[in-house]
Image (cartoon, rainbow, N blue to C red; front, top):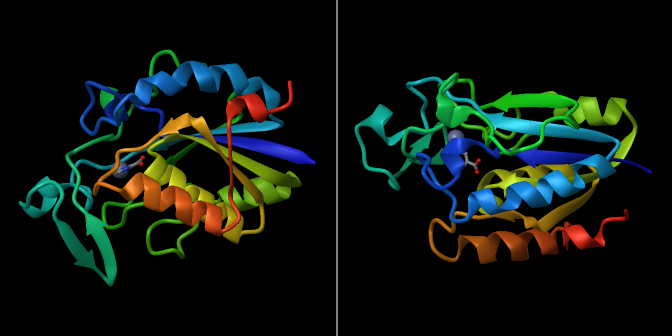
Length: 205
Ligand code: VGL
Ligand code: ZN
């Protein structure tokens, strides 16, 4: 069975000190570095937004955390983060990129957000990752990175829907828990959909 690791959004803005920090987001970096050699293909994603992105509270003159609805899609408003080419959008400096085969940027359309590495938030617009994995004959998809209850969650849900055996490596991900209880909700929903929640020590050497 061919496998792939998707490292989701391990970027400065999602780490402590960044614009949209995930508590202890940086703690997963050594865990990911320790496992990335074990996979047939490794994909690293970057949240990569234009300055006027629809997901930014500032774009709407609203407060962070407010929810707006755009074309029937609910959008939580975030602080300005991962602006294309900014230092906040860079990978965490200690993330080992030497085993990464493909870097995939998402969220580039100013008018739509993209939590999942497979589809934008309209659930229709493809990033192309499905075809990359399918074209390479990959069956097993392992997911880690930031944030557990957003981009990791949506990536895993699309992965299992697309028919991949899907695993989330719990000690290699951290969540924002916005709103409170969201991590618990995301993990129980993932389990219900058949996504396997594992530890990095469960992976074969
Ligand atoms: C993310 C919120 C906004 C994530 C990206 O990577 O989980 N969360 N943009
Ligand atoms: Zn974003």
